[in-house]
Amino acid sequence: MLKQTKWHSVNRFDSFAPVRQGVFAQWLVDGRDYMWNVSRAISMARDVIYIHDWWLSPELYMRRPPAISQKWRLDRLLQRKAREGVKVFVIVYRNVEAAIPIDSEYTKHSLLNLHPNIFVQRSPNQFKKNQFFFAHHEKLCVIDHDIAFVGGIDLCFGRWDCPQHPCVDDKPTGFEQSEQPKDALHCQLFPGKDYSNARVQDFYKLNEPYEEIFSPPGSPKSDGSAAMDESDSEAEGSADPDDEDKYPVDGMFRSAAEKKHVMGMREVERESLLADRQAEIERQQQNRMLRQLVAKQENEEKKNKVKKRTA
Image (tube, rainbow, N blue to C red; front, top):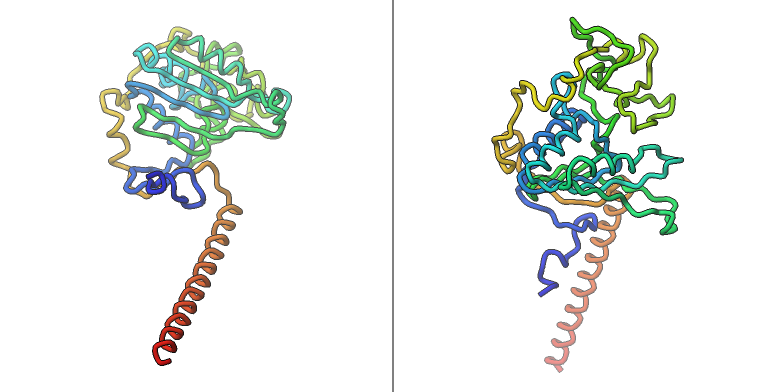
């Protein structure tokens, strides 16, 4: 019986999963569209939320600008769903601080302190396992066992982007700069550590997420400073025309998504695709040779039978 199941057969590219027929799927290229849709799905969760990231920033704003998107900050969003009874399970990569300063310990305890319904674990200590070269880059977000986000975008700083690739923040009229901002509202598109520059150390002191990396006037996002009341920064909700909490999760994306053939894969690279293609060509050649040998053998057997009859 096991050999007759689809799980026993070899899948395309040697994947662990077979090809799924007629799956609703949609491409999300930039961080803006990806994070907006993830926030939409999380807000509609009713049972369970699974998140698996290489790096997760609790203070990440899933929608921009932050001034009108306070309730869409990731930690506030997860806390709100946990208070509603939704179980939240998070797995993050345990980083090596000397090489990758993403502070997974801070991420873990920041989320655990939000609510008892939030569970967080980090990947095993690789040094104790004698695995010195290890990093888990898989990104997943599964909502209510019904909708899944897979791909290469972490819910963390430095991933939000849009097709226009803005390098500076727009300065709204009526806002004044403040030397001691109290929250992320002094920024617009890129709050605090969310803007990075590879010419300097990429990210550091992540337990202070809104400390500016760049302070000189004229640097990206310095012209978009804004000071607002601290009470506004903790507001749970504001006027938001995009609040779809009343809609079920299983109805998401179906207006924009298309039915496709989908297959889950651990990892694939161009070299592995070429290797699989070459292996497929070799298998076809082997099968062709086998068919020729079988046909030749059958012809010889027929000839021998004819000779015996004539004899």
